[in-house]
Image 1 (cartoon, rainbow, N blue to C red):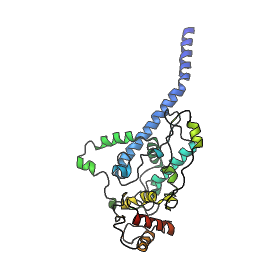
Image 2: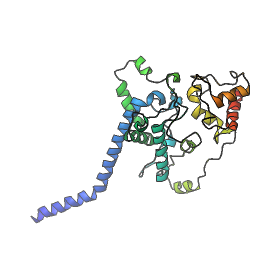
Image 3: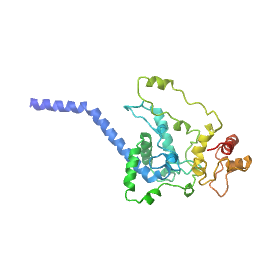
Length: 295
């Protein structure tokens, strides 16, 4: 009896000692399951515009890249990078959730939240946010290949949207982000290597300075174009839904293009950017950019 009690005591002690490891393993398994669900949602809903690996226009897709280091959140215990501060991680996840749930006005990004007429629940959107912030593009590739296995080459090629004209622009949304307010999330320095000087480097890091050239809503005019106009006019301004916007193609007056941007074009997908909040100086900067700067 004493021997059995002693064995039971040792077993109980070992269980208690291993509780932290068991709990961490369970948490990791749960996070992996959520990321797997997010990857499945991405393959079924998002890759047509953002690309299989989330590389956006760099991968031949029409939408911005989601596979970027600035969208990563480094968790506690990471053996390579400094943990992302909790407040910074919360702000980034809120931005991504808002973008997916509400879409983006004057772009082809639709409203996905079922609360606003879309197909996804808050839980499903959070799965997508987890996928993006953990950078689990390996799961997207794995699930995508499984999904596409029965398809022909032509059917696989047809998955990626090539012509944005097939998409409608979001006229309004429930969000508040624009290229200026979203700038901090696109320019985050998320992956800071661990090391003896990490804490000091993090403490002395200085934020990026203001753009040195012309700006639109506080963002460099070229960056504003890529985040806002490239969906319709092309990331190299070659023209897709909208016409090409290269200096050689723009032979009309500055006033003509100013009025086009400010007031839109009835009967086309070109919205009125003045009504969307662009000031006259912002529009003038855009006109100068498209008429004088080569892609």
